Image (cartoon, rainbow, N blue to C red):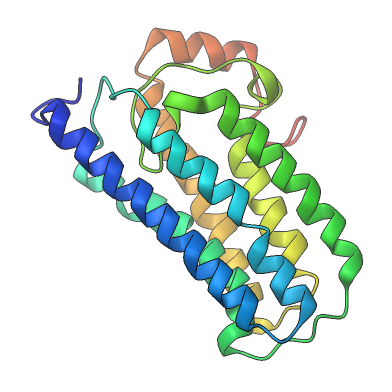
Length: 210
């Protein structure tokens, strides 16, 4: 159990985060209804199943065996927030939704994200924490398929219509996601079970590349 954090406090925090995911879903629904462009509506609505599943995962996940250090908060939170800014950039900075074929990439990424969260289940987290190691499903191909899905999902829907601001946000997303992975693996790598997992699954995001 996370040191110095009572179990009931941790579960209360998880409940609050789950509510935040539900609020994000409500925001996406309202924004999708108000949006004038059909592709912006699709983009906003596409996040609903992922956010609902993430919220449910917080309600059912197990407690960590090692807590998140204060210095491990900033990068994961920035990485987590970037997709929200990228996918909502059309609400406050004009874009032209003229590349609908990229909807296919976004849809495939949603499927990968949903499958990854289902396999994670009680090990799902936003901040670095040590829980049960998952080595099945997409996790037997790369070590961080959910992060890969997130970036492909954002890239697919962003390329349907983008501007310089969304491109800048996407660069930040990629950089902070890679940094986030390194932080997590440094923490998890202190445990023999994860080191054994890394020896079996060599690549973090893209087989043969990284």
